[in-house]
Amino acid sequence: MNPIRLVAALFVILAALPALAGELSITNAWSRSTPPGVTVGVAYFTLKNHTSKSDRLLKMTTPVASKVQVHRTEILDGIARMREVAVLHVDAGQTLEFAPNGMHLMLMGLKQPLVEGTTFEIELLFEVAGPRNVKIAVRKD
Ligand SMILES: [Cu+2]
Image (tube, rainbow, N blue to C red):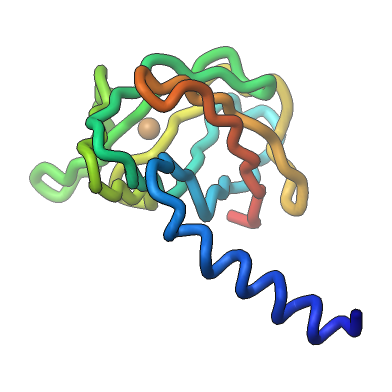
């Protein structure tokens, strides 16, 4: 198969994926590189609950940090503050965007700098959908 046909075939397969009902998906996962000595990092992604059931995030772990939390950035009187979202709910059919200045995953106690061009994994455990292992691509800050 020539490369163009292969790409076209892959595209058809990828385009068909959202049609598979019942998926809780995490896409576009990325993080920022961190300078040496910095012990906190972030991760962003798009979380889509294509299932017919509401779900809840129970737990997150990653080899690169001692703790992962869901945070929300709020601007109050021109000052950005981060608050922990103690329990993250995602309704049936809901899409949640984790993005700069909004919701994000906060990686605390980084064990190593996050280096541009590398990837790391975060395992998210959902009450209904079960575990999701997400590969996070580190970009330049
Ligand atoms: Cu934060």
